Length: 400
Image (cartoon, rainbow, N blue to C red; front, top):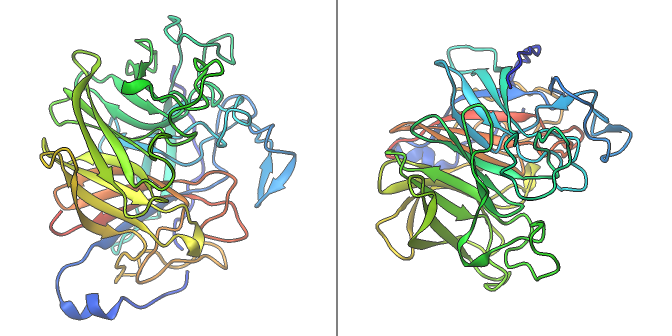
């Protein structure tokens, strides 16, 4: 199901200049540098029924609720689009929980960012057609909110997505946690694939009173696919219940897209702190992944969000090498300025990713990354008085 829509482009120019850390500036070595930035406004809407009724009535951080149709909101996954310069961008379950997201439809949108760079560009993001995820064949074995079997944010919580070699779509979910398999048009093809070891979150409807083995909202946040399309690599956002809240261990699994089953291969990824989360991943090649690890801060409290390269050959514990500090990206050309609203923070040189949930990474080339934010509408981030916009940035990364 695809429909076309248009939104007015908004210039993504944005705040207060800072100084590049002296050590990095004096070293003379190439450093990760902000190349481009684009913004989708927090108010952006698509077609469809009203949404956000459970959030409340009235403006929240400048955004009126309920929304009159479907909000596009921030992105948890970004894939290549159908044309050059476009991307397929997927939001998560909507507003953060089953209880408040039953009127949010699960989609992936075709977007076209016009990145603001040192050479120009509006910084706008236009939104076109979308993939509507649905289950007309009854493969989803649990009760669904809608009788037309369109997936909502009360049914699944998609946090990662990859495209198979034949164009089908693989989705990583947190409510199960499950891997969900769709065709390119959004039709569910298989019964959800559960994680090995009986890992189930409190939101899994199959629990039926049994204790959860994976904490809520700590399921499949990061998932990438091998270059040959044969394997998905799944990284849990947080530690298992058995490991406990003080554990830095995040389980990593391999899933065979041909066999449609998890393989015996597993790894562990260690976060820098037990409080840090694995946010997304992308395969550089058959042996190495790019991984985002972040804290839970937003605005000026967002101090740790780093991109690592990890090596799958370092089994069972993955080694990792830092390549980008997303809290301090060089912006010598001041691509991020001027501010969009008075009071915007984290702009200038260095540039800081201030959204709470920096959740999407896409490798554009051997030395360039696309990073995207889930704005967690209607939460604040870039500006303490306004709902966060969705930001997409391009970073040049020497030695990736």
